Image (cartoon, rainbow, N blue to C red; front, top):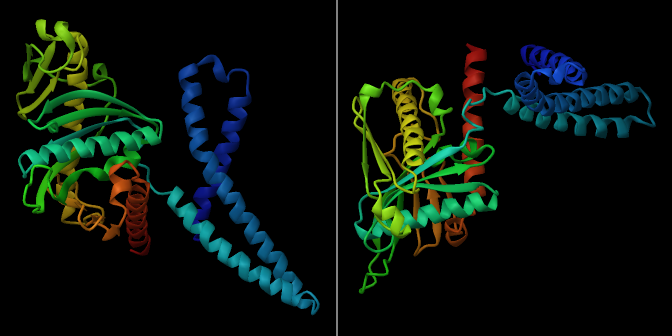
Length: 362
């Protein structure tokens, strides 16, 4: 292990000991905000230090085995232990490097998931509905909550556009690579001659921002309109101007929310989506600036970039960014995304490790 990594791990071990002492003291709970902050830090450091201790133990085991090499009766056993220990060290070091990678500050946040129908007419709208169900089922498997924010239904039961909020620990860290163009190839139910059609949708995954009260939005830069909601919701929802549309004048971003009966709650939800979109726009602009230097293997964040194809006749799903093809389309569209999301996270970590190695070798 490189001395710089070992030094950092020693510092983290010392800090964890300090946190243990602080949290065990009687004064720790006097400031609950600081107490929660220290607990979060402890939860982040604990698995890193625990893995580092396993690494150090493996080093000691190898050293002890080396001392036994001089004993003819123990030499065979010692050589086997050394070989096994070195292999274990390699695995532990790789895992430690992954844990030490810079953490995305948004990883633990809830998300806003937007799905928009693209090319393909009615079939695209139906595909948007299928994607929403896929993500909703994935969230259900992880015991996350899904809250409808806004929807614009298409004629045949799908969506022109739909926005949901997904509440769950690490939602953004797992689903952030879903942003981009999703393409489907299948025979539509409305196709009488059995021809395969290709249609597409775009997906945007945005981390939920902090409370809107903590984000400065100039009131003169937004226009708020109210109108009567359309669609299901009973008599009340269609008799009052509870739906809210917010337009951010400098960027032209428009957000609508008509899910609830309360105009105030709809305004609050719409502002939350607007803030998330504005921050997402800033992130994507920054990605464009840095793309010329280095483009991530898992995509540039461009919404128009085709990231995945769902081919129903062949029963396959292909993620084009990492050249991964899985022949389990029925399971995937039913929400079994774990293999895909794990592969994307692993590829991202590999890219970060490659960048780190370049910096250290420079």
